[in-house]
Picture 1 (spheres, rainbow, N blue to C red):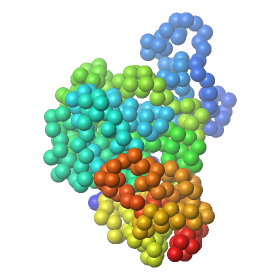
Picture 2: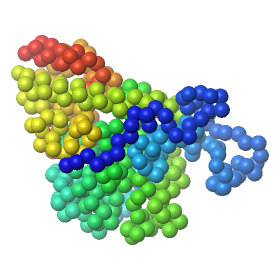
Picture 3: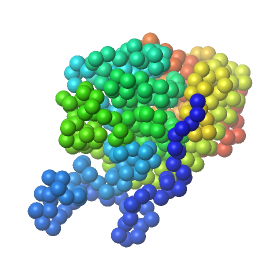
Picture 4: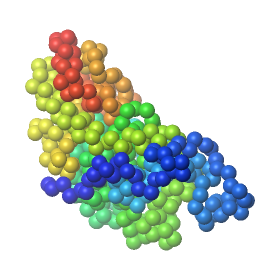
Length: 416
């Protein structure tokens, strides 16, 4: 599989387009305000009528947040982006924009636990999800029926680390006249631009690698502007297809769902994400390199029963990593160590790695998923997500690779 994605150069991350400040600031200022004043009543009326560009209320629009949105749309190669208060809020707003009672979703069984919980919540609104264990194009095509409104997936699932064939699944969804929505949190545009492979909507929990240092909770939705909402014939009841055409999804998202739910991103969090974006390509390159080295070390270590990392030749999804820039496979791996007690002992003996429920930080992070983010899931759902009682998830950081390996080596020896 050839990587056909156009990865933005590092310069694009450091120099956003059309970002100027009247005072000459080299970084977009934080417009930390709830609302914006105007000299005349007529001017404010025009802004509310969308007859004149401008800002009125930060829940609806803010210059700092818009700067982050514009940069994300540019880096992903999309038409527009909408920033949200969290990754979960981004998924919720995206789904609610497209769905009504009686609709269904097709998705992999190995999704992140929080997303699986949201899919269960949707059942109260008459919206169902068909979860597929083997998320191949053939199985997805068989699961789609007349009620299906979109296919949703994580490009690298968390923590199962299944890597999907984006192009094949985009073709399958489009054959059924429905969009492909992807969660690209684990890859970021530094490794892959899913829109180049046919994805229609890209979602990130930008709290993770985009922010890069664990300082802001946030999410973002990028609309490719390529899906033919009107022509598909499946969205006239929920989207203003006739009026806005290819921009119908974003038009409803921003003017209705996102705005009325109040899922806006705080300006200071948008600013923190902008600073994180500047170093994203450099961080991802080092993180991926260290993750592969750590995975190889752990695979050869006594006391480790299994290592799951897509960048290893032993991974069932190794071939799919050819979709990513330079075949880089992300910064997350999981290991199995034999029992819950041993998993806890390993975590407790680590000196550098932090035990906390996040990924994509500058620091290496570890977690026991079964007792934390999957604690409310039933055993079958955990197993489908690649979570067992002895599973430890590792999010590799920016420490010197030798130091990361030494930390795990010492912990394994101490628990032996």
